[in-house]
Amino acid sequence: MTKILYDVETIKFSTFFESFTKAKVKDCFKEDSLIVFVVDQGMLAKAIGKQGINIKNISEKLKKRIKVMEFNPDITKFVKKSLYPVKNVDVEFKDSIVYIHCPDTKTKGLVYGRDRERLKSLKSLVKRYFKIEDIIVD
Image (cartoon, rainbow, N blue to C red; front, side, top):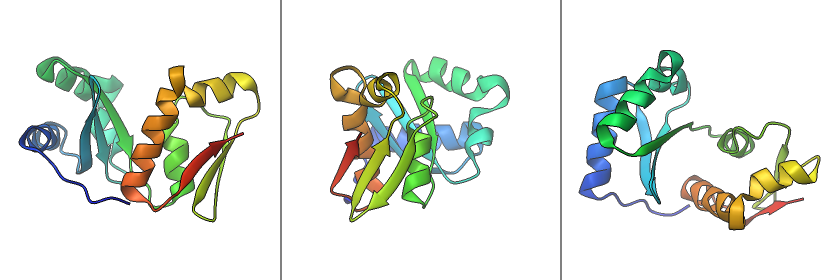
């Protein structure tokens, strides 16, 4: 778990998102060309809007791609939700290590992403909120 510092641009994105969707933003950060908003538990549907209209409108206004995630204080549920759209994975947390069990190689590839980019971003995301040493995919 690291100390999170925000720049002015990130704060502007966060306040704009909150005022537009009326959903409480827990965190906001930029990841390459993507802006990721982490909303409080139970606020995901409100943030997305009917048929994703809020996300579409915000994406058009900011001229950036947007991803919205729901925070969960349970690390296994948080990791599982972070892996969306990958569904059939088992996540367990032992000795400050997160284990992701994949049923087949296709699912494993989806978890890793191209050049392991998805796994790297997942590690940095989880380390923002929880004390972990590593994420192991098998």
